[in-house]
Length: 352
Image (cartoon, rainbow, N blue to C red):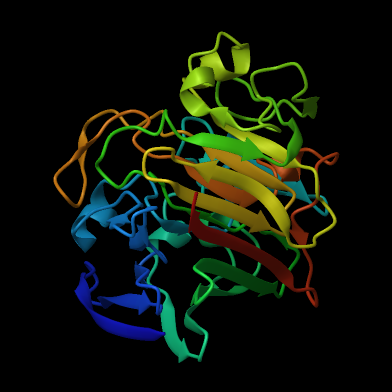
């Protein structure tokens, strides 16, 4: 195991970002930067031992600042959407920054994906860790409380990329942190993800309106094209006339995981038949957002020069449910003083 680092460029305020490279003995490498906690490169082998970068992204810090649809980023304070940028907590209404039509998305105008985190390197025998920490001040993007956040980005000898999140606040607030890599198991820039085969350990999902805000319903996946309890080729479902898929132009939905007791449990498995690459996701969270890159429109050029078209990558964002502060029937995202928010997600890489 090893970690190296080098400069990644300067922000407009003059502060310098750093990029870290984590390596294990099996040849897996992961590049990440303390700007936005962004994973910029992740190489894994196919069934023949050939390595490829399996995450979408850019070459330069400037591109991440200017154009990125959250490629590889650490998301907070609240992953996903909050309707009308508004919620009520203990009798007080909080108005958040609005950055997605009338709604609040992924932490607002300057979410955790756009801040420079303090980084600490921790090297152990069987894993390498980059610990990112950030103090989000009371009122940032409209949220209450000084929120102290730490996120360990871990590469292990078991070919796992692990994220361990903790947060505390001095005021009652809401928190929902996640990671936003766009995966393509055939390799970044190699085409679309329609041939990927996915299964989800989910028995329901949260339907949304045309703004992708949950209606409040928790609907069984049974008998619908949202059912991934058995492995399904994404391309076989993505053009379904099922109203939820059709209105999103693919999948952009929160799936309700079978395991919701806070223990680490399997959430998703993705295989790519051509390369044989396998991605397994385990999480302590009650939900996972499957997003199939529906809004990639061919205007972004990736790190190898490839154009990112619709469905060039897929995201598996482990999370509490979107708009939970406005739906008391959803698992709570409230964090009170004296409590600690904890969340662990494992992305495990292998081959068939």
